[in-house]
Image 1 (cartoon, one colour):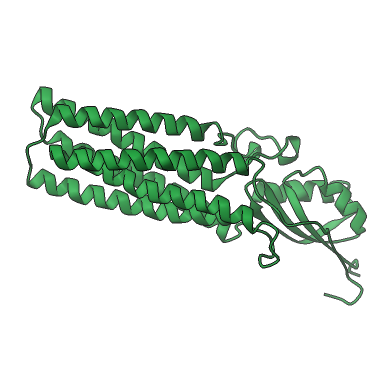
Image 2 (cartoon, one colour):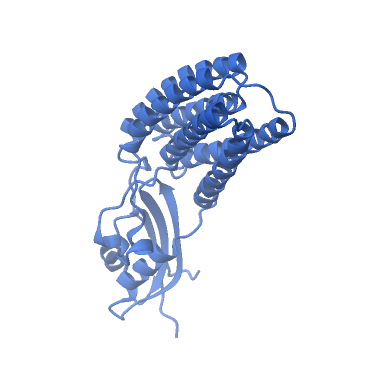
Amino acid sequence: MSLDSEIDTLTHNHVYLGARHDENARRTLWVVLLTAAMMVAEIAAGLAFDSMALLADGFHMATHAGALGIAALAYAYAKRHATSGRYSFGTGKVGDLAGFASALVLGIVAIGIAWESLTRLVDPRPVAFVEAAVVAAIGLAVNIVSALLLGHGHDHHHDEHAHDGHAHGESEPHDHDNNLRSAYLHVLADALTSVLAIAALLGGRYLGWAWLDPAVGIAGSIVIAIWSWSLMRDTASVLLDATDPALEAEIRRHVEGPGDARIVDLHVWRLGPAAHGAIISAEGINRDTVRARVRPVHEIAHLTIEIRPAQG
């Protein structure tokens, strides 16, 4: 960088929590309490009725209760330390870290359920089908309530540019809260195992298919593993500061569009659920013009501008 380069950093606080951070935290805490209560009931019933499907659902719910507890703690930690100078870009990615941890838990749960189910296929045991099915139905009801609680805060919208061709700047950014998403996926996984447990128990009771109980455990573990990988991939991308090609392209279009400037270096990364940071090195333009041209890109919350002298 030459000596006559000019660097400008927008100065502001570094609070990059999602717009619905507090609301999502409250919803998650309620789901933790519901999940913990149902976890105790399902494990006790699974042991009493010797149902692998129900016991797997109970232990699965136990790990989810722990993961959801991590999500709740992540919300609290991110809020408490949002203005701390210890974190250069705030605590907006604490939720992604919690989401990554939850994804690992989901993966371990999937492996555990698959292994135990395979064991039960080889060595089947008698199951109290009707009693276990009743408990599984109650568990499903709890999961539905939990999903409704989290679903109201869960952002179902994806990046406009990635799905319908619209640019980032054409609308206000949505929260991409991976902490809430991880909690939501845990609840959906619980609901799935409850549905499969009910189907297996009813099939065993009325069709005599005792093998269905461990078989659906294997099927459920596969689906859970897929969800785990998806969440792990997305949260790791945020934690490793992966760039957003469509957002980069939009910034280039705004800055270079008039034809009087050139971006020589550009970095874009996510700072939190609804905020990105950007470092723009440009030539042939001044910093105020760069700032004005980038302003319509609503996702950019932290902008550093470097103006380099024109070459030649």
